[in-house]
Length: 244
Image (cartoon, rainbow, N blue to C red; front, top):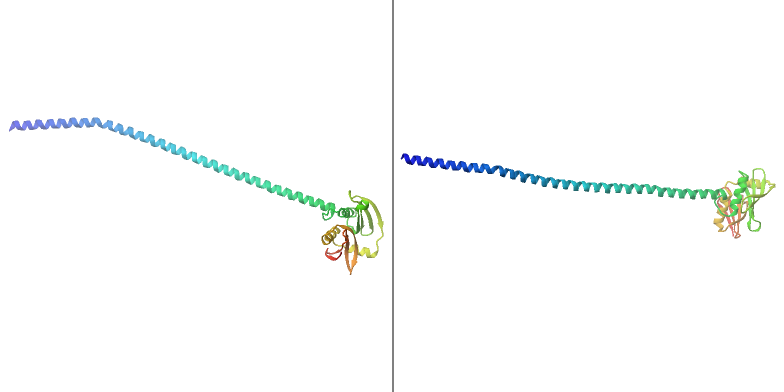
């Protein structure tokens, strides 16, 4: 009985020793597995870091491209805005040039007509400021001048005005009677306005004209080169009569 018990105890010790050896073996292997895990984890971290870096670079590139596109668009818009005022300025310059040309035409020829009569009456009024044209006759084809009579408030002057230079080449003083004086003092419109109205109504150019009274109304009686005679009210510019 005692021998059996001792044998059983030895067997138990051997088993415990084997178990201890096995445990030591497992403990020895454990650090290697931890190191492998750490290495694997480090590699994974490196991959993730690389991917993150690549993603960041890509986003940065995209952001840069977007910013460049935005800057380019703003530059184009700014350029367009700069060009538009230039076009507007060009239009304004054109309008200014046209207005200047119109003003020059008006200064040279009353209401801007290009017939010598317009320039001639304007030259007469420039010489006798505040005067009233009482009659005119175009002698350009025959004598190269326009004859114009102007009343200055006291005297009527008969002028010959060169049809090209519009310089006064001859001046004569003429008496004016009471009726002619009253007709001259009744004038309220520009002679150039009356001539233009006559041209529009009769469809021809002016040949001669004079102040007259028709049925109690003072008119500019203007004869055109197609023999049409047009009467224009000197107070309002209305066409009173047309005789063809």
